Length: 383
Image (cartoon, rainbow, N blue to C red; front, side, top):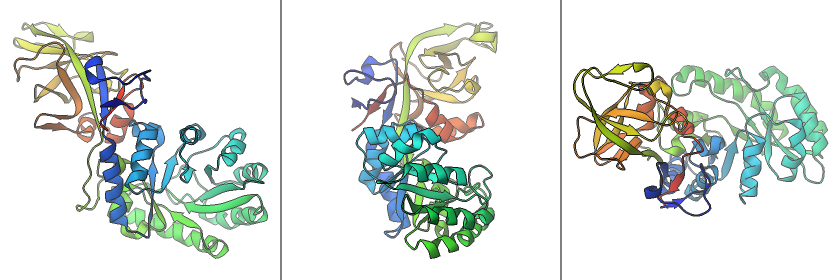
C-alpha cells in the first residue's frame, strides 16, 4: 500500500498504521470497471472516463491512469484547472472540459491541446482568437432538457455557421448533450436523445467525422441506443452501478474510508454524548470516539443517523458529528480498543457498508459521499 499523493500530500509513502484517518483506493477496481463498461458498450463506442472532482475523490491522476489501462480512451473534467493538472501530470489522451472555461484561460488550453465545450457565439469567438498554429478543438453543447449549460437546438445552425467561418482556427471535434434523468426517467431521456440527434443531423452533414456523445453511466448501461460515438462514464467507473444498469455489468467500488478509534468508554444511563446533548444514554452504553468528522467528509447530517463498521459489526452513529470526531455505540461488539479501525464506508470482515448506503441514510447519493472525503484525508493506493 502506498500514498497516491492525493488528499494530504506526503513527502514519502505513508502506511495506514501512521494515520488517524485514511482512504484506501484500489486502482485495479477502476481499471476493471472501465474494462467492464468498454465490454458492455462494444468496440465501436469510445469510453470517456470522467475524472473531474479529483477523480470523484479517488485522485485524478490515479483514476485517469487506471481508466486508460482498462480501455477508456478519453478523459473528461469540468474545469481548466483540472485539465491543465492532468496535462502537467503527463497525460496525453484526448481531454475534454465539459464545463465553462474563463476566456483568459483559452489560449493556454489551446496550446495544451485540451478540448473545450462551447455553446455561445462569445465562446466560439474566444476560441477563434486563441486558435492558429494549434487549432482550438471544440465540442458544441446542445441543451435538450437539462436546463443548465448548452445552446437551444434552434441555435445550432447559426453557431455552426460561425464555426465554419473560422475553420482555419477552429477544429469542431464533437457535439454533446447532458441527460437530466437517465437513471429515473427513460422516456424523457429518449426524448432528449431524439431532440439531440435531430439537431446533430446538420452538424454531421457539415463535419462527417464529428464525435457525438450524450450517455452518462446510467444511459450507457441502461439505454444502449444513446451510446452513439462515445459514452461519458462517471459513477460506474468508481464502482457504483446507477439505476438501470445492465445486470451483466460487474462493478467493484474502488474506495473505502477508515479512521482510528481514539477512546472507548462506558457511558452510564442519563449521560449525553456530543454537542447539544442530542443523544442521551438510556442504558449503560459502550461508546467509541472515532477520529473523523465533517472536516473529513462525514456529513453532519449523519448525526444519530446511519452507522459505521467496528469490530466487524454495524454500529450506529450517536450524537452530533463534529468537525474532527464522531461517536458510535459499539455495544454490539467486544474487545474494541483505542487504536482499532473503524470503517466509515467500505468493507470490514464480512460486513460491507457502501457509499450509496451511507448516502441513502441521510438523503444524498454515493457521488456526494465519495467526493466529500476531504483533502486532509490521505489516499493510500492498494496498488
